[in-house]
Structure formats: C-alpha cells, structure tokens
Length: 360
Image (cartoon, rainbow, N blue to C red):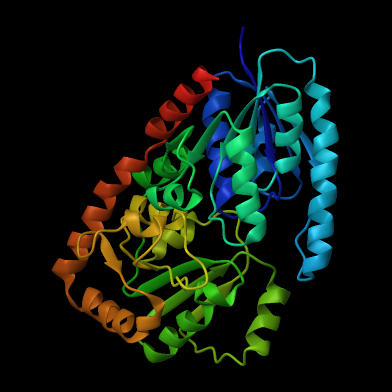
C-alpha cells in the first residue's frame, strides 16, 4: 500500500527550515506521494498549493518579541495540532513527518496512535526547552534526520539518526545553469534575520570601512522593523549599502553578488547548516563564514572561501580586500564553489530521505 505523509511545520515563513521542507516536498510530490501539510499561513510552504496531490491545513501563528506571549501561542498550537492529529487515527500506512524540534504536539499524538514518526531537525538544543524537546524526540521518533555532523553531535542522540545535508531546489540549479551571472565588481551580499547576533551591525561596520565596495543586506523581516532596528542602534548607513526587506525571490541578488558573508556570532548563535552558502556556491560565489557549526563544514579555507569569526572583524576586512585585489584568487574560489555545489544536488538528498521513508 502506498505511504501517505502527514507533515507538520510550526512557523511558515521564508527562513531556512521551511525552505528546506518545501524543497523536500517538491521532490516527493513529483514522485507521486500523497501529502498533507499542517502549518501556519503566509510563507514559502504556501507555494506547494500548485500541486493537486497535497492538501494544506493552515492555522494562524506569529512570533512576537514578548517571550511569555510567544510561549502561550506555542503551547496553544501544540494543543491544537495534537488534537488535529487524531484526524488520521484510522488513516492506514501514514507517516508523521515533523519539521524542526518544535511541533511536539503532533509527535505525542502520533506516538499514542502508533504512527511512524520522522523528525527532520534543523536547529541546535540552545536552551532548556530545546533540551527537553531533544529528550522527547529520542523517545518518540522512529527516525531522526540531522543536516550536519555538528548538529548530530549536539543533539547527543546515538540511535535512529541519519545525517542528510540540505539541498537547494532544482529550480534554483536550473536558473543558474541557464543564466549567466551578472556579477559587478566588489558586491558583497548577506542574508540574515533581524537579530544582532547575526552580524548586522558588523556588516554595516564593514560597509563604512570599505566605501569602494557595494554591500547588500537582505533581512527576513518587514521594512518598518528594519528601520526601527537601525534607529534604535544608531547605525550609520553609507551610500554603498542597501538594506532590503524580506524577498520571495533572492536569485537576482545572488546573480549580481561577488562574495557572500555570514557573520553569525558563534558565542550566541551557531549555525547548524548554511543554506545561503549553498545558494551562493551554485551561483559561483565564494563565502566567508564562522569557524564552527554546520555552516563551517561547507567551506574549505582558501578553496571555496574562508572561515573567520565575526570577533576578528579586521581579518574579515583584510580578507575581503585580498579576495578582490587578486583576480586569480577570486576566479579559483569561484570555480571551486561551483564544484562544491554539486555535492548538494536534490538527487542525493531525496534518495537518502526515500530510504528512510521506505524503512518506516
């Protein structure tokens, strides 16, 4: 009997984890899987509605700056999805696919109903809630997917675990195989959420110190929130920097960029993966990334980029100057980035996921 996938994702926006889930579901839908998706509305996962064989169930959910309110909303959604899950009590041969650690409600329901459960983890256990959720999934899950060696080690779960690096959509690959990059000299790109520990202030600092270079910062938030952040932090913006709000289509920005930065502070936020680095590599763009985390596994020093912590901002600055002042070095980094991108093609990722589904 054909297996049916019931997928749960808490917050549907345009960040990494829903993008990865969309890429996976795109591939599975092409292969004829019958899928139901339960998530919030208003993000990248809504694009899956073009497929006839997927049914999407929406609820309203947003993060807020008020931690207590966010916790209350989160708890409510867990109760809601817990109860909603019993809709599938008599659905034969269905698998619960939980994206990220957060949707614990449907996992508990699935366990009660004796459903097979796959957890697709994208984050680190960064606080007590996440540590608790790690213990929960170690009990609930029949299979756990991690996106990097670093993340797998941090979860500290030895059994039922597979490491499957993320991949970019076929459409992204196709775009850059059919369109020449329109790179301008010295265009430096960073994509980030609106958090100080993501290196926003340091990116602006670099733009002020390197006035001959163009800086483009895409922030996954609304323009009014970005304006408030700039004002609150008294940031000085030069003529050589663009700060752009949330974008559905980022390909044109990669097409014009020459270098990608990730300036996450490793002491406050360790990246489990680096989707933007893979996107950059497909476009032939080298990257400068932190020295730890899953993102560091994507870059080889001096081959397709450099690993430098944001605390050493002067070294990042001098490395940028070196990359752009040496055309032979830049061309080598760019060509090696294209070669490395082939490791993260959709075929490899989906074949590994299909093997896990087949075992459930």
